[in-house]
Image (tube, rainbow, N blue to C red; front, side, top):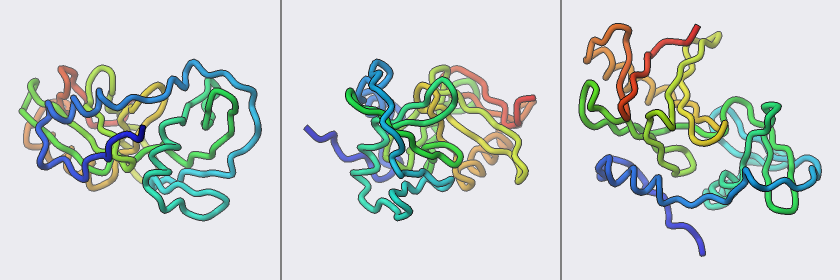
Length: 189
């Protein structure tokens, strides 16, 4: 049975509704599947979140969503698409997901931050989905953990929203709370 279509935006949803939707998404148990490695998938996920197969973009959002549900990060840092009977390498330029929309509710220690990903998945930052910043040659790169070693790069406009919220709260160091945890908006050293 196909999963329900993801919400098109977060503006009409409360954070409680977003958290419920995120919990309801049932993913395959890829962590428990250990098939033999079969080769390369001829697939790549670009830094902007576009999925490619044999050099051509995958235009069907439902296909990308399906493939994203069987994506796993291996202990050596590589990425694979895995089913109970096969495991194929997939190239990932940065992070396999991109956080494209932010919804914030509350303020200070009572704030919660929800992200909609390019695949339609929903993630609420907190202890189970930490937000972190890494220094890159072109400035800070913010990420939110989606699941077991899979991160979403926070898109630049969403990062600017986070920075604006943090500046308004004037915490020292600059940062935001979500899910009862404080996340500094500076790269870890």
